[in-house]
Each structure stands twice: as structure tokens, then as C-alpha cells.
Image 1 (tube, rainbow over the protein chains, first blue to last red):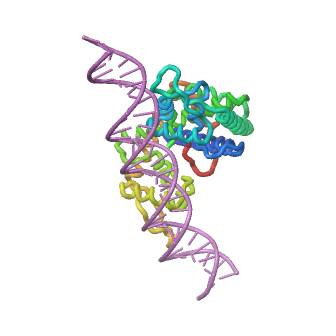
Image 2 (tube, rainbow over the protein chains, first blue to last red):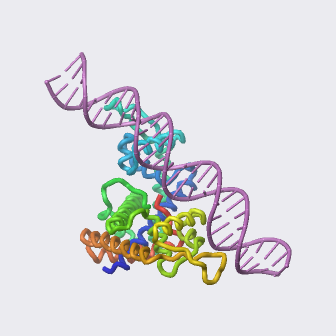
Image 3 (cartoon, protein in one colour):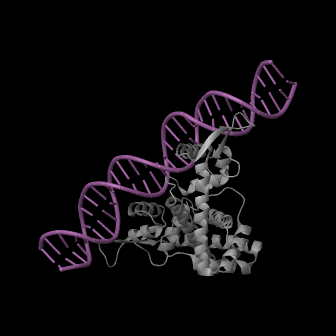
Length: 148
Length: 148
DNA sequence: GAGAATGGTCAAGCTGCTTGACCAAGCGCC
DNA sequence: GGCGCTTGGTCAAGCAGCTTGACCATTCTC
């Protein structure tokens, strides 16, 4: 594969990723959840199963503990999460989503589904599924990083 | 398609995009071009055919003219581009890449090709081509936006 | 030509991140 | 038990990249 093809593929991938992020964000706002940035969504994703500590969140987002702590301050202040004492480690605190936080997570899922549905109308549902399969195999396990 | 599948696809897409960006950036640094951020790459891409004005660059990057102007200052100061009088509009200036800027663009293309080649080893070259086809059809025309 | 629109820069301010310092609680070891 | 080292978390200060607002020079429109 030539360099120019690789560059075209890369540009397309980043453009699609950027647009998807924006669409999800707009969908979340349209469903009544304001004052959030896309980065919060990735925090919610990490918090949604069973909560996490600030340090775990920082590792997931690829930022310092201080930045993660600040982000937690924000979503706590806005009612999306709360800090609880950690059941096993008295030093740590477990950050868990509130009901409002879970509702916001569902709104993000619906928005993502809307966006993906729109893709189906362009390239066909089977191709979208194929896309999902390939991307899942390529996705790294490490921290989620901002695209640039 | 269920919401959870759409979310999984979205997460994979964003993870792959984030990792790709990072790999390209690392590749560019490894080839000796320092002091650049990934955002500069998107500016270079817009400048590389025949140059562009600050306003065009701003629209392409989805930021204000001031921010674009500042970014241009930076790449000019570092020797990657230069401001020339615009041949048709005395108000405007045409920003064009220097030879060093073009070399950096080639380095980015090589890095992207390396990353894409690595994908080929995971999912097969034919799947990578398919990925490129689908993504190209889905890619929007508007400004490139940071993923979050 | 006169007035509005456009390209560009200067200046000030904000926000999200970083580094550095610090405290409290756990762990390892004698 | 008591001593150090490590780990989870916050407070504080600083920085980088962006924004809004003001302004000048040139061009377009009539």
C-alpha cells in the first residue's frame, strides 16, 4: 500500500472519528444534559460498570491524577456522580455515577446509535457491522487518548 | 443494531483514531521533526498542495482566525512554512510550506503507512482496504475537528 | 467615491492541563 | 508495636492553546 493511500485512510478515519464525537456530543446536549464535554463521556464509560477511583480514571483517560480529580469535581458538582468511601481501602474514594449520570450515559448510547444508523444508510448495514468487527480487532487496550 | 453495539463500535473507532494519531506523531518525532503537535499535521495537509490563507486554514481546522494565525506564527518560527504576499489579494497572505515543511509532511505519510501496515498484519490487507473504502465514503467534507 | 465586508493582527482573558508540594492511609520489615 | 517507603488524593501555582473584542488595511458593492 502506498503512502498516499495510507494517508487518505488515516485522514478519513480521523475525520469520521471527529464527526462521530461531535454528533454524540450534540445528541447528549439535545437530550438535556448540558455543561459536559466529550471527555466526560469517556470518564462515564469507565465509571459506569461499578465505579472507579480517581487514579484509575486518570490512567484510563491518560491524564494526571490532578486533572482527573478536577474532572470528578466538575461532574460531582453537576450531579452526575458522587464520591463514596472506598469499601476496601480507606485512602481511596470510589467515584460512582448517580441516576442522572446513568441517564446521561444512556443518552450517549442512543446518540451513538443514531449516528451509526446514519452510516448504515450510506454504506449499508452489513458494511457497518464489518467496520465494527475490524475496528474492534484493531482497538488497543491502553488509555483512551484525545485524537490531537 | 442495538445501542450497546453502536457504543462498542464508537469506542473502538475513537480508540483506533487516538492510537493512530499518537503513532503518526511518534513517527514524525522519530524522523527528527520536533516541537510539533498533531494539530500541525492537519494544517500541513491543508497547506501542502498550493498554500492557503490564514482564514482558510482556520476554517479547515475549525478554530478562530486568531488561533490559526498563532499556529502559523509557530510553524513559521520553526522553519516549516513562510508567509508570502498573496498574488491576487493584497489584504491576504499566502502561507506556504518550506522544503523542511514538505519533508515533515513526507515523514508523516511514512509514519501513517507504517501504522496502516501494522493493521494489515492483524486483520489482513484486504480488510484494511475495505476499511479505507467504507471510511472514505463516510468521511464528511467539513472542517477537521479534534476528537474531543 | 462612500460604506460595508473581508483578511489579518494585537491584546486580554479563560479553561484544562501540567508540575510541585503536601497529607493521610496502607504495606513491609525488623 | 514502630519505623520507613509506597500509594491515593488534594491544594496551589503556572503554562499553553484557545476564545472574545478591538483595531487597521484592503477590497467589494452600489
